[in-house]
Amino acid sequence: MAVRETLGDRFTERVEAIYRKTIKFILSTLTTGFEHRDDDDLSSAQHSATVSDGYQPDSSGASQ
View 1: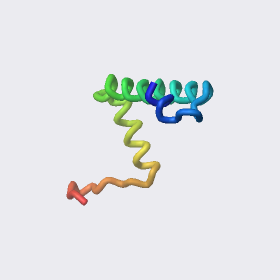
View 2: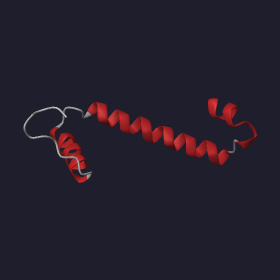
View 3: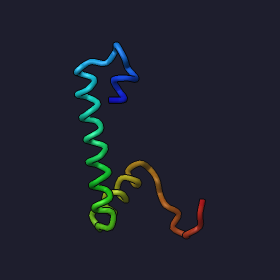
């Protein structure tokens, strides 16, 4: 595993467990995003996230 080689002596079983969980989470999130990229529910969730972050799209259609 590349992480083991990179970390060398600092590599532990705990680091491996965290690494594996992180990779599984990232892959799961990417897979879900690709599978549902055309769903209306996902578009609504993305819109809500951008609005809650303070982003307001320009309603005139002009690019910023």
